[in-house]
Length: 271
Image 1 (tube, rainbow, N blue to C red):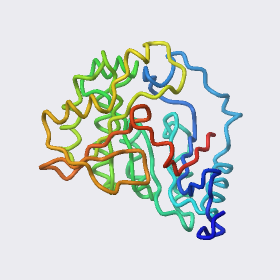
Image 2 (cartoon, helix red, strand yellow):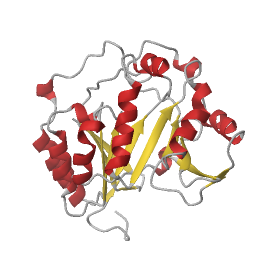
Image 3 (cartoon, rainbow, N blue to C red):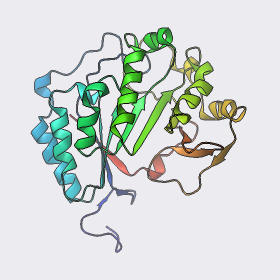
């Protein structure tokens, strides 16, 4: 611990202050995105998962140790039974500044208002295609209209910050970069383009062949939009650009081409 650090700060061996906790409340998902998991994915037996009470207790301990931001993830977090009540309890923890959620939006028509009331302030929504047939192929079983209804429900619920996350894959959706940007920007939603990461078990495509770098995506966007890098961005992996004529921003999460591990400020808890 450094002289400047308080006794409540978490500091890793590299001297980085850890103030952000990601909690994966389940490994299950109602979609089977080709870049994320196998179509016949085997999930953990439910009896092996942390209980909601155990997750809440760990969240409380992390907040007491200086973590000010928690993100709930999965799998798809909203498929876990009673997760909204867990999120509400976490949102009530003294000292927690931001409560965030990453979701595929399929369950948002049912839960958006409850999540807003529970204290969620930021939602990241995965959306990789605006074409129903292509969306179904990428997710293997997804209904695009259901996801779009979820996005509308989040907007209607009034979350202060909603962001679209899009994974761009060569041979699948690289021709939708501009359409996805317009979709987000016209709704005052930030959008981040994410380089495919070598995580999870997949069997549907070759990651080396499908990889599309952030620089390639940026080059596409610059042909349509006037972009200006946002100075002083920190606290996360996204490198944001302001877009002339829009309030929302375009970001890039580039674990391969622009590695951000050195500035990492987070830890992950898996259920």
